[in-house]
Length: 230
Image (cartoon, rainbow, N blue to C red; front, side):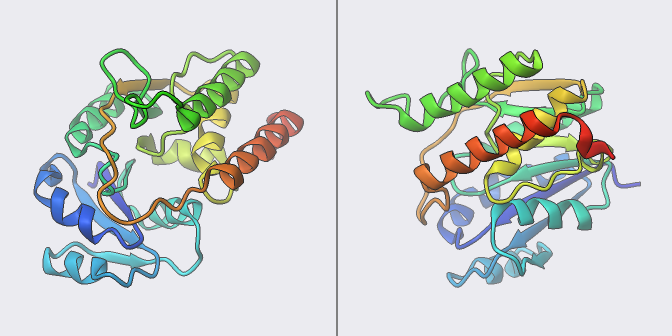
């Protein structure tokens, strides 16, 4: 029986993969594979070299990587990981441990004690402040105590992923996942993570469009309540 599936999300992440591949604790999970969207920098060939199966993503957007990964995963537990340097692979065993303790959703938080956000060394922390603002709103509306509602480095039970009936596009899927978990009263845990600096490549998340998308889905979730269950 496959207990935990590690889903590696990529689009042109060859630099990060070369730096991190030997740091990923594959032995901590029962299944691992990549979901790749049209990489042209050798990412897919790199996976093939290390005998890591690759699922080709046909539709653009981070959300579709999540959906495709969940669909192909055989495990009861899902871990979503991006090898871009921001996410610390050494956290994977802790994510597995929290799911084994019975939590439905586990988030690697950049804002807990002993954690680090990529912008901590900056004076102007636009992304961090926006994240904390969206997290505060979600906590106030749905009585939560989450510290990092948006970070995509997370693990979730597959049955919970299915129950949430997620339909957000792009990077908003992580925020929607957190909000709907709060709505349904799922058990949520967080672990402190040290967010590193990005290694090569370019982030697919542009601040203004992504922020507007979060606002749209926040308002939509307020309006629909729990009707997504029907």
